[in-house]
Image (cartoon, rainbow, N blue to C red; front, side, top):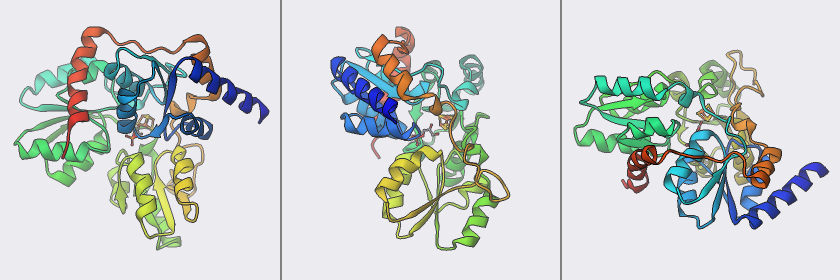
Length: 319
Ligand code: 13P
Ligand code: SF4
């Protein structure tokens, strides 16, 4: 629509005027992803967003995603201004892991190495030895396990359970979940597989174990997009937020993509597998943040210094 065109032009002008770059997650709306690409920003998974923001020489990072992504960008680049379209965009994993309760849990288990998922507040990261994202979680836990370390893992119990099962590591799990991925149902995927036996199943590891068990490929958003390209299958059932379909379909225009059902009867619920917080990012509030300098992320200096260490371990980790 013409209104969107005007907003897009305005955002392009404001990005340039502010020496700003747009860093967007695959779950944000198509227009934001496209704009990030067109203006020299990036569309990425959470680890790549962190790397991109930290390396970029812009004065301002505009992070379109959820709160922890903006905070991570600020922790890694305190000298940059970090803006978000809205500061209301949180994540059920972050909400479900309050820093005080988490810290008390860690205190009860001083013999364990604390590994937290990136989907957490700066205060939770500050209590951790390691931060990981879904793309390197398995590798980091394998490395720690080889050193004989016992793990305290938070907050996603599904991702934690998957890693535990895959690596055999000794992991104590916090009881958190992603409200989006938790809704995928094995029965619905099995029904789709019965209809299309040659379809491959791609699953984000925040999904329940029964869904992960059906997967041909398990990975972060970027890893799933790569797999869509590399797999020989021309039909793909994808269990993650539907925002991913924009980039994935661009990458494999010849393939048929199916949203993994979120209802047990095999019906696809189009509004379910979409993160309500990611959906708060829109062209309007993105333009507003740039125009007014609203939605700025601040992280307390002392907290930042502590949260930086486990984040840097993640960025420097090499297999
Ligand atoms: P990725 O690390 O795959 O981008 O996942 C982040 C996230 O919030 C998934 O729900
Ligand atoms: Fe958090 Fe799930 Fe939304 Fe990702 S999709 S930001 S894990 S609530």
